[in-house]
Length: 406
Image 1 (cartoon, rainbow, N blue to C red):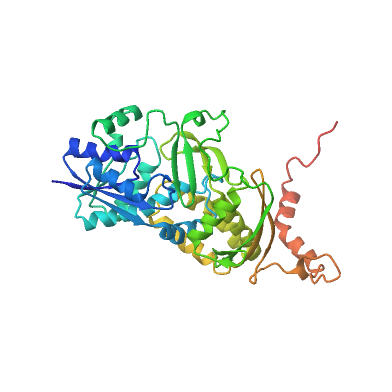
Image 2: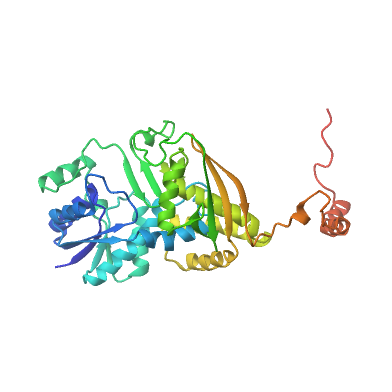
């Protein structure tokens, strides 16, 4: 009998997928639940979720704690890359998928499985991320997508779970689809499918205003990695959680956007990611202070491409690895402190920055008596710099040189 390892979330689709694959494809199912920082419902533990997988018919359900792995190997490089897809989205779901895929393949090897599976539909980005990632790490494994094949609506899936006594918590009335991890929360469906509609407060948790006074804090970086808040060193996973709590309490960190999915459709998405947005902004600010001009400009150009690759499921790809090497080299001197202020509702300002590696020279920048810049050197520089344009204007003439006459 074929054995399949399923990326299991404990939700409706993956719980139904366990039984559906057993009944329709006559396979053994092993579930892998990867903890990437999602907050399990307070009324149930991961043991409860594991019991649900076994109740649906899985022969085993492995729970993997990958929170620090995600922070140190995935969020850290995303911060270094100032990664925001289409200039907005800090890759909340996209960053967690390669973490899950890596453990999915690892468990497939341990259980001698012939295939891996996911619970994604045919409309989203995650099917691409799971399948491309799995093919990159294990070209020999078959990748199955039951939810893309079964043709069931949400109501059908609820009925199917009831038929097989699968202990789900979902109902036919559930409005929102929510994916969360250490890096933030992605919320879609319901009223938000209308891009004109105001996002409801009901599904929001991280960015509900709970603190009306300003929150001031200092984030410190070493070689591009955040290492402390207000001088208190902590693992990156804990730092992200702390910043989600403190910044999110002022309402900061909510994104409402229409994004271009990899599958060719536009989708209205709402994200809650206080720590991600704050850390990327602080990191970019310290880079302003320490990166040489040409490196800074080239890195800004490549950051867009890096974010696109990760969004498109190309975490395990040669171009992504090459860009990783470039980004790592740029971080050697990205060390220093950034002061942030958060104010309700949802505002953040950078109040100051400093670095022992700063290329900012007060003597060169100031206009006061301590000015050490050699102003006389500028005359020759400007003449040489503009020589080509001056020659072109003299020989061929600049367009639109004369202002319009009234």
